[in-house]
Length: 211
Image 1 (cartoon, helix red, strand yellow):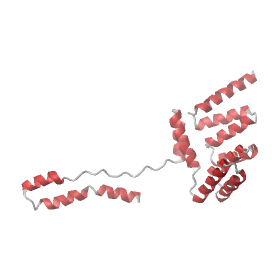
Image 2 (cartoon, helix red, strand yellow):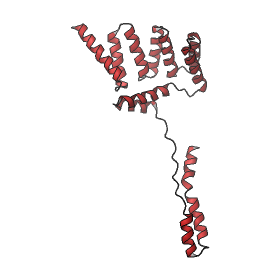
Image 3 (tube, helix red, strand yellow):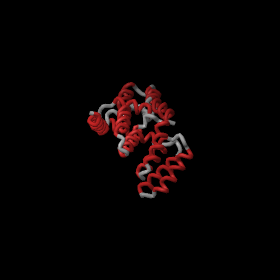
Image 4 (spheres, one colour):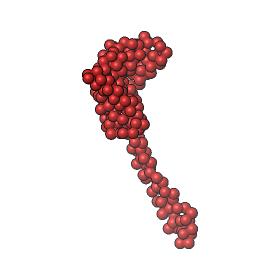
């Protein structure tokens, strides 16, 4: 439909020109001059089809090159939204119900909805990441790590899951593991100033412990 509309728009400027050419031959030259000024067709700008959304690969390539933190954050948000969007309306609805239940502290219902989404599409990164986040919020760190590992198995560049893993390792007191996770995160999202500061701080703390 978009392609048809675009091609149709390209032909529209020709229509008034052809009509004008057909009537001009029956008029006197002086009438032609006057009418030509009055009836000159208005130039129409062809409509352009909307740009296609970028793929995750394109977004992550942009994210790795971008050095402005604010612009990088916008790219990161778009990438996360892309990962969280399923082609299936049913799965998207289950994820919305799960998020709503979690916000209302109905954790059992939230888990049930997200479990259904994973059962319907086991390779959907967004559902695994959402369940990892839910387990983390409930303090189920072991289950959260298990889900994070599944996310990273499906998509190793999922910086949201990597940050979640780094947070859990920090909570467990594993500074060395957390540092490695944050360094991995910065390989994907290098413009994140907060992550840069965390890496710097952890590096200094670990260096102090080794001396």
